[in-house]
Length: 342
Image 1 (cartoon, helix red, strand yellow):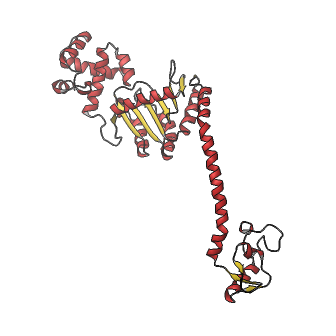
Image 2 (tube, rainbow, N blue to C red; image 1 turned 60 degrees about the vertical axis):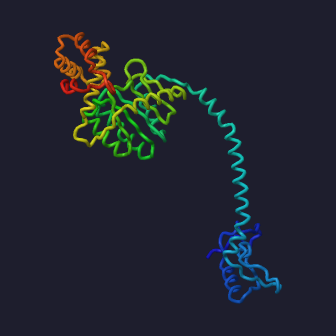
Image 3 (cartoon, rainbow, N blue to C red; image 1 turned 180 degrees about the horizontal axis):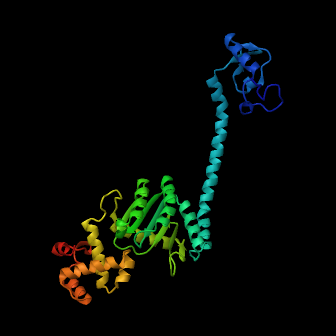
């Protein structure tokens, strides 16, 4: 066994300076136990640890001390020192916390509250950094129907890793994704990892919100080439509130279900098509807003027109209004009209 650093040295004494008890120290301690005392050359290691103490009744004799007692005696001043440092650390933290709000306020003022990104590479990089730094919550609204397989593949690994580190992911799609195979396959994977997905007849626009700290919304023109990053707390909170409103109205989705198109979902889609048609939107505009094909929009309108005996689009709008086809809870088709139109 190696000798302790204290033994035979001129360094300062104390338990903190003792690496271990040397061989001579072990023998001295053992002798003190067997013989109820030890006299002679006492290694500094056992003295520094308090394992031997002077015999009050016999000069030059040393008595063995219980290891537990020695530890308690040696640890007490160290614990007091640690406690003193902890109190000092708490005082520093309290002082820093007192001015932390100044740093946050100035930092928010220096950071651009809204910034335009107009390069696809810059957009992808900014989104990647934001999602990777997301620790608590990721909110996304994805209008436009089913997403491309390429985009879904790019998002899958990133979103699985996000869920693995405990962040809450909530995603909104439109009802029309329920029949889109690639999107449903993606939904199944992320929901198994803990994400939540719901659908709605109409999503107001694309938005991605990370930890309610930064949000991404479309800029002018093509959303793939123009994105706004929003870091103003008030604006981000407003976007999160709009998301929560949509989320409360949305329908949960079970990717393992054989059919995602329940009568309720089908009615909501049909109602959305007819509502926009009555408001004067063209088939192309309706298709874009609801994330479906123009042909599907035309089919919904034709079935309703045939059921109501309409001969023109203006007449159909009039009949929808006068028959109360869009009245009732959630403005969805109800009663006899529902069965006839569907």
